[in-house]
Amino acid sequence: MSEAAANLVRQALRDRGDTFARQENELRQLYARLHEDLVEAVRLARASADQPVLVKALKALALIKRDAGHAQESLALYEESVAICRDIGDPLPLAHALRHVGDLHLSAGRPALAEPCFDEALALYRADDATAPLDLANAIRPYALLKEELGLAAEARALWRETRSLYAQVGIDVGVEECDAHLAALAARSDDA
Image (cartoon, rainbow, N blue to C red; front, top):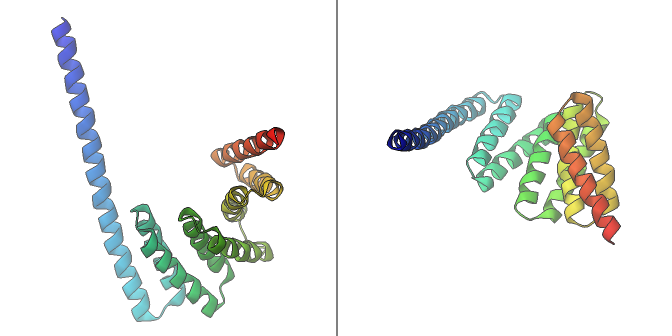
C-alpha cells in the first residue's frame, strides 16, 4: 500500500516537473514568435514612414525585450520612441514612453536619470484631459517608489495616496494593496524616527 502511495508521489512530481518544463518551453517559443513579429512590425512601419505605428511597434518590442531580461535593448527602443513622439508632437504616447524609460533607469539604480523622465511624463499626463486614470496611476507609482528610495517620505506618501485613489477608482485591487503596504511602511518608519 505504501509502495503504491510512493509511486503516485513520484509520478505526480515527475508530471509536475514535466509541466513546468513544457510551460517554460512554450513561453520561450511564444516570446520568440512575438519578437519576430514585432521586429517585422518595426521594419514595416519604418518602410512606410508611419511614425505613430512605429512608436507602437517600438514600445511593444521594448516590452518584450524587457520581459526577456534585455533591459538595455529595451531602453534603447523606448528612447527611440521618445524621440519620435517629440518629433510628431504626440504627448500621451510620449508620456508613456518616458515613464518606461524612467522605470528602466530606476530598476538599474539610476534615480538621477529616472526622475526627470517621471517629472515630464507626469506633467504631460496631468496636462491632457484624455489621460486615463490607470495611465496616471501607473506613472505616479514609480515616482512614489523613487521618492521613497530617496528618503523623501512626505513626497512619497502624497504620491502613494494619489496612486491609491486612482487604482481604487478603476478597481485595481492589487494596486490599492501595494499602495497601502507602502503607506504603512512609511508610517512605521516615521513612527520609528
